[in-house]
Image (cartoon, rainbow, N blue to C red; front, side, top):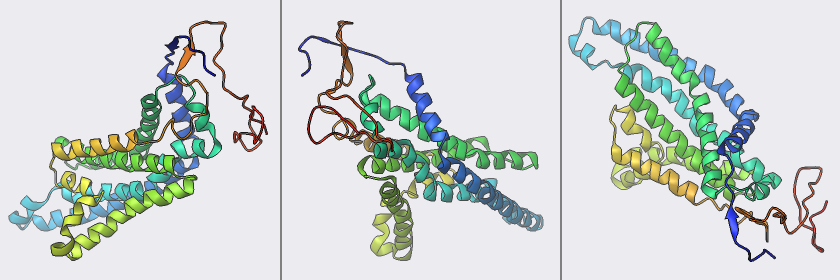
Length: 304
């Protein structure tokens, strides 16, 4: 039993925790496989968009009305980031699930929450790791913009940053859904199925709303892709940004940290004030060969 003595909260530096999350994310295969697929996908989208935009520009030399309708945002940026959008929808969930799924399967998460970190700190570190993975995945798309500038193309900074912001919000929303699914599911495979159900289900909703707008037009607000449409038009909606951020916070706030994985009788965020009284778990922890931590059926210790 825990001592009734006053407990003193122990703070721990955020740096080592963040470094651990980034190291585990970067050491996994899903991130680099996604990046390997992203490079040719975005490259093909970019060169195809530049070719079509060049042909349209050549035609517009003889038609002033057509020239005024041409825009690099619609002709180059949106098609280029379209390949990035497909990869984030189908591949990025596997990267985000790894941030939490491996610890959940191995049992390491039960020990992680015993460290002197608050739950929002643990969740924040994992969200930063997801954001870092998105930044790495966005390198090919940002490189395409640099190539467009080098080729003499024009970019309006405000609408370009607005489009990048839209894709960032979409990526974080997908990542938050993936973390939530990884927290609830027993395995990473199940979490991936649940997350893809949300992302691919958005395409089904979009198709249904477009085919029968009178009957199913109301369902478009359920689609995740709706978060991108406003930004692709070059518009910035503060209410949309706030709504997406609120949805991300609700998903992260709903992660069942502590209640599901906490070890019974284990001191979590506090240590005793006396240096002679060491905080201890109720059982001695011994890992199995496969990395899992198990509780014995009888007795008071955890053993192989």
